[in-house]
Length: 421
Ligand SMILES: Cc1cc2nc3c(=O)[nH]c(=O)nc-3n(C[C@H](O)[C@H](O)[C@H](O)COP(=O)(O)OP(=O)(O)OC[C@H]3O[C@@H](n4cnc5c(N)ncnc54)[C@H](O)[C@@H]3O)c2cc1C
Image (tube, rainbow, N blue to C red; front, side):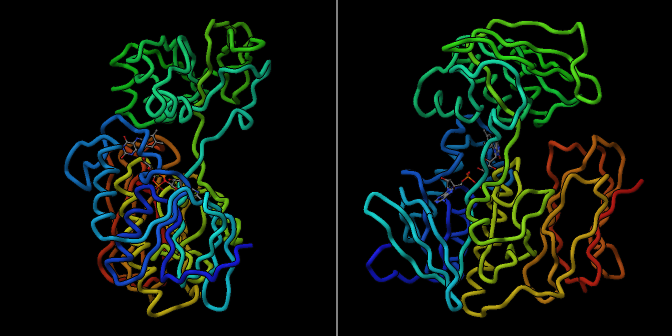
């Protein structure tokens, strides 16, 4: 254990992606003494490797690349002279008497920090090949899409000359285009479901514009190769995802790139034994972004996988504001907070999972529909005379997250989201 005395802060922000940067700035601007802790050498999180554009339309009213978006947030952060430690990995968090003791591991050794509030902003991780059932060999050449993106965009190295992409998540679609632009042949994107997982704009701009075929209801069932991937087998599947006999095709390639989903990084939430929502796979929070542990807040992809960095920044700002307020007026989880009710058949997920009527933070509700539906109305009832929100959507699709901010005060005796005609 470290032998020096713990340095004291009001708020420790863990993770320096867009969520953590916005949270640190917002907590600082609301009067807290803040330390930002990041395990990597540079700030910016996943955006460091996103050289494509499409970021910041909401926050900056401009079309930025991920790196440009991150740089704006980093510049804003540095201009405020907020303390930061990089190459520091959080290895332990212990609740003490009304504070938290956070231990980090870095090149300088182990350091300890004592703080009143913590903001978890540690992002998400990719599902790996171990989480996908494929027969055959495990040679070199099987990458997650994020790893392939890191090789190309950060290291300047090509991981493949000819590849197959399994899964139609956004990173896979973006990498199909990126690898094509860099001279590789992308044979196709194979998706087990009957609808793509990624954003429609990515299907159009990353696949259609480059004549890369998308094969729905089709999956990779076998990998061949000793040292390196030499080929994969693909098969069409029925509605139970079982291969349809007679549809097997073997494709020569030197890499299989997996884009089979992202999951909130819950190592730190687990360390604190925080309740996890099985729908979002991230910790449960109220509208102030506070988890069930008093003084522990969460924002960005650790809560649920966002498709737009802009919303990650919005949740970071809310967490920062709330954490700073907590430092001057500590509170415990309100056991009378109202739990969100919604039909699991209509929505993939919705959050925050609780509405605390005693908290002053306005509610921003995030949700995804379970199916591709047209002409449905979504209504949020917060116990007022009128619905807190009601909108008829032309189309709702699971790959596109929706967000709604409710400005008016509400009794919060009811907290219910419904989808109807
Ligand atoms: C490939 C890809 C393409 C995208 N394309 C778009 C797009 O076109 N437009 C758009 O708006 N959005 C896009 N997004 C979404 C957006 O980039 C993400 O939602 C956003 O970056 C998530 O921010 P975050 O701060 O929650 O997490 P991250 O950016 O992942 O940051 C988390 C940080 O926490 C650190 N960390 C984790 N654990 C620890 C620990 N124990 N100790 C210390 N530090 C730790 C990590 O090193 C990391 O820096 C894309 C995302 C990806 C992955």
